[in-house]
Length: 128
Figure: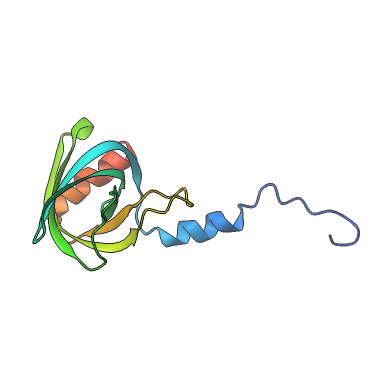
């Protein structure tokens, strides 16, 4: 309050929104149950992607890989006819915890995704 007058903050975004936006470097798009296949020294694993960007994705998994672990990944964005196969690295993970609402899984970064596939994913995310 300044000079007894209440300030109206309806037009200003909430702080958490601004902080969250600063965390994202690339746009993301929700993916509905995108089956992901990964192959590493431990063998083959399957997970489901919830969000994807040109730089990586979040894969739900009850047994997420360790941060820093690298593996081959392949998946298809069926509605856009985009097939992806590249190396990926785990950059963060979330363990299963029944007291939290966050899904267990891992955030991965694509390591060697070719520029053509990045562009196709970007166009799909932007709705072009």
